[in-house]
Length: 514
Image 1 (cartoon, rainbow, N blue to C red):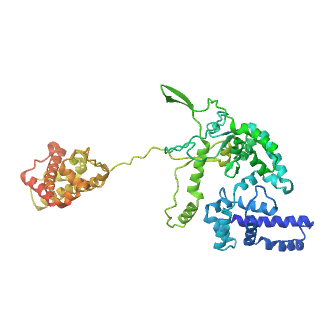
Image 2: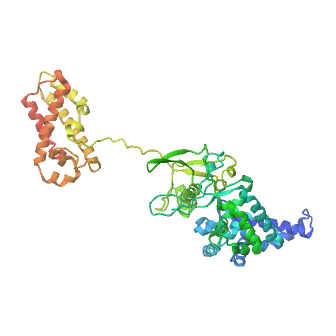
Image 3: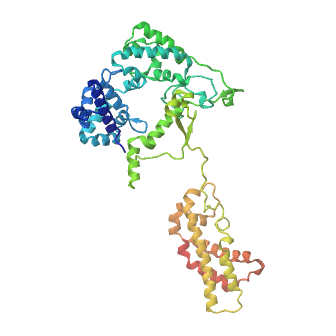
């Protein structure tokens, strides 16, 4: 993977050289002078030194940068070093990729860990302010005045949207209402619903005014600016933006309708259901809780690819090595996207996340059983004439021969043994499923068959012979009945000698049947 931090520092060095050339009025074609400037700048941009100097200089972040060096440090922290994961978020997770990149830049492993630890201790809230007001703060001399003017503009535009918890446009882009916000209530009921989990606010607003959503979503001391607007705490705005009380109160007054008002009308494009209530029904409009939906997406992304465990697990997997127990993945996900190429037209959160997932909700696949445990009788439910049909037909051809010699007798005995082997094979198949399929309270099996087939009677099966005597007689009778039934009128009437022989072969297999 390409080292994005290295690319960023290289880019910063090139920009510094370019700025120096412009400030000194040097001709870019003057290679000698340009080379001198590069050599003068080079020591400051040695990777490890540059990183250490920035970290030591900016242990804490102000909500708005005060110098070019601080802007560089802000840009480093918000730098995407993996898909939608900033350097700061990687350090907060203790992600090994952040450590690998720092070591690649010349830091020792211990120094890299110390560097990551210091970055984790830095408050990340100012980074969101920097991202939102990046254009305004580029002019360090007049940054706060420009930010104030920008907030004035956002306050004027705030009447174009409302904060919502359930985005109607996720049902249909043409739905303009209802616009409602429900914080729900927390209850230990085991359900995932609004109120039982912390989620982000969403906003239904004109696509050109999405910065209003980003502004009211900003956090200060763990609370969103929306919370401060609702409570009328103007002091937070005074501290953050260095404005007087009148200006702060004016902003709160302008933003208040946007974060407080609701539009409870429904729409013909919203799915409607009749829900029983008392002796009648309520007509409910079904909306998608966008905060919950995108919170789920973030958690799935974390499991599948963004967490330190998933990174190491995927790395080991690609190398054909065994992954640890902490590595897991969620499969069979359906990716859903609203708004096509213009997700900003749907809602604030939809524009931020772009897509979300649907978990697999297909009905369970019923495993096809190759063996069914009998309820009343093994010889009528689990073993049938058709299971041994070919062997009975071969036995019948031998019995039809009207003379007798050793070859005929050996052929007859071979086929009889083959039938017993089929019974034993089926016996083992039934025993293998007995622990799952046998239910003593509903079973009507005869006692000797329960002992024969069920694992819970294994001790009695080994220690007793009475059940085995009964079973051997039953096996012999089944062979005779199945032959006569299968061959019908063509069956040869078995004499006493054949019946004795069948019983003898079954007896020879007593221990195999046990």
